[in-house]
Image (cartoon, rainbow, N blue to C red):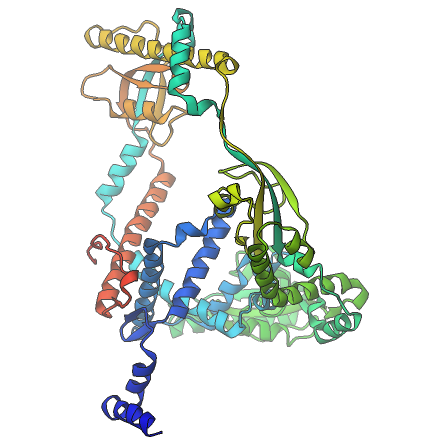
Amino acid sequence: MLFLMLLVFPSFVFFGVQGYNRFMQGDQAIARVGGQSITPQEFDAAQRQRLDRMRDMLGPNFDAKLFDTPQARASVLDSLIGEKALAQETAKANVSVSVDRMRSVINAIPDFQQDGKFSYERYKTLLAAQGQDEHLFEQRVRTNLVQQTLLRALADSSFVPRTLSDNVQRLAEEEREFRELRFRAEDFVAQVKVSDAAINDYYTAHRAEFETPESVRAEYVVLTLDSVAAQISVPEADLRGYYDQNKGRFGREEQRRASHILFTFGDNATAKDKDGARKIAQDALAKVRANPADFAKLAKQYSKDPGSAANGGDLGLFGRNMMVKPFEEAAFGLKQGEISDLVESDFGFHIIRVTEIKPAQTKPFDEVRAEIETEYRRQQAQKKFAEAAETFTNTVYEQADSLKPVAEKLKLQIQVAEKVTRQGIPARPGTPPVFVPRLTEALFATDAIKNLRNTEAIETGPSTLAAARVVEHRPAALRPLEEVREQIRVRVERTEAARLAREAGAKKLTELATAANDAGFNKARTISRSRPEGLPEAALKAIMRAPSDKLPTYVGSDLDGGAYGVFQVLSVKMPAQPDAARKDQLARSLQQTVGGGDDSAYIEALKTKYKAEVLRTDMKVEKSAPPAAK
C-alpha cells in the first residue's frame, strides 16, 4: 500500500485527475481538430464504411489489400478531419435543417420504399438489421444535410466567367467538314509473303503468347451466413412468440386517400403575401363547404400543386410519415368525406378532404410463417456466425492437410474447381465470387502448391469466408510450334499488311502536301468534338487540330483494324443555330466543377482554421499543396 501511494500520489499532485488518467492510459487520439479528437474507433468505423462502399462498387474485383496501404489510410483520416472541421464550422454558423426537410430526404431513399412509397415498417426493419438506432440515423442524416447546405451555398457562389463557358462551348460545337481516304490492311495482304524464318522469329520473341497458363485443380469450402442459418433449429413456440410481439410488421398500416387544394405564398413571403393567400384560401373553403361535390372542380381552378391539380387534387393512398407533419395530422384526424379547415405547412395553405380510409390489417400467422422463419434463422445466424467463423478459421489452419475436418464440423460441402489460374475463375451465374484475388494468391503460394496445404480462411464477401486446397498443380507449358504455326502466320501477315497500309498512307499524305488532289476521297462529312459520328478518337483529334488558316489541308491518323486514314479538311464553321440546351448544360457542368474545387479549398481552409493535426506519424502522407481558398 505504501508503494502504491508513493506511485499514485505524485501523479495527482502534478497532473490532477485528468492528467493522471492520461498518464496511466495514454492519449489514443489519431488526430485532433479544434480541440476535438478523432479516436481509433471513429477511424475504424470510417475505414469499414469505405471498404463496404468499394465492395459494393467493385463486386468480384474488390481486393481489401488495395485499401490497406498508408496512402489509403491517410485518405480516410483526411476525410474524417475534413468532416470534423466542417461540423465545427456549421455549429459556429448556426446552420440548421428542419425536421420536415430531414424526413423528406429519408422518405425519398429507395431502400425505405415499398411500391414507390415510404414504408415505416421497412425503415425500422432495415435499420434494425444493420444494428442502427432510428434516432442516431436521423441525427446523422440531419448532420449531413447541414453540411451539404453550407457547401451548396459556397458552390452556388462560385463564378464561371462567361468567356470561359463560351470558349468551351465553341470548342465542343465547332464543326469541321472533311473527306476520308482509307488505306486498309486487307488490301495489302496479297503483297505479304511470310517465311518460315519470320514465323520462327515471332514464336521465339512471343513465347508467352503461346503458353497454357499455370493452373491448379482445387477443393474449397465456403462459410456463409446462409450456411449457418440452415443448421439452426426453429422452435414453433419461438416463431409464434415473435409473431405476437411484432404483429404490426405483418400487415398493412392504416392508409388514407385524400385530395387537397394548395394555396402557395412563396419561400420569402411577407406577412402581406400570406394574408393574401389566406384570404383566397378562405373564399375557396367557403365554396367547398357550400358544395362539397365541386371539390375536384375547385381544385383544378385554385390548386397550385402541379402534381395533383389536374387530377382534382387527388393525392392517392398514403400512410403515416409520408406527408409533412401538419398535413398528416390533419388528414388522419378527419373522417371519410370530411373537409378540413385551412392547414398551413411549409408548402402553403391546404384544404384537405379525406376520400377513403383503409384500416390497418394483420396477416394471419400461417401466411407469414415462412417469412418469420427466414428472419428468425438469419437473426440467430448473425449471432452465431462469429463463433462459426472462429471455428472455421482455426480448423483449416490446425488441420491443414485436408478440408474434410472443417466440412464435417460445420456441415459444409467440399466443392471442386478445375483450371484455376492466378487470375481466378469466373463466378457461376447468380453466385458470389469465391476465387477473389486474395484467395487465388494464397492458393498459388509455395507452401500451398508444394505441400498441398489449406489456405488460410479468407473473407471473400460480407459474412463470407472461404478456404481452398490444391489437389493438382499444372505448370505453365509452351504449346508446340507446329500447333500454333498457322496462328502465327496470320498474325505476322496482318502486322506486315498494316505496316504497308501505313506506309502507303504516309506517302499519299506527303504527295498531297505539295499537290492537292481529290481523287479517291469519299463523300464529305461533318463532325464536331461533341458529335464525333463514330470516328476513332485519334482521327477526331487529328482533324480538329488541323490548321484552319489555309484550307483544304490534309492530316493522317492510324485507324482500327490496322488501317490508316488520310483526311482532307474542307471547312471550319460554327453551327447556324447554337444548342441553347447544351449551352445551359455545359454552364452547369462548369459551375459544378468550379464549385467542387471551391469546396475542396474551403475544407482545406477550415482544417487550417481549426488547427487540424495528425498525431500518428504512420498516418501522415505527403500531399501536394491544396488549391488556394477562394
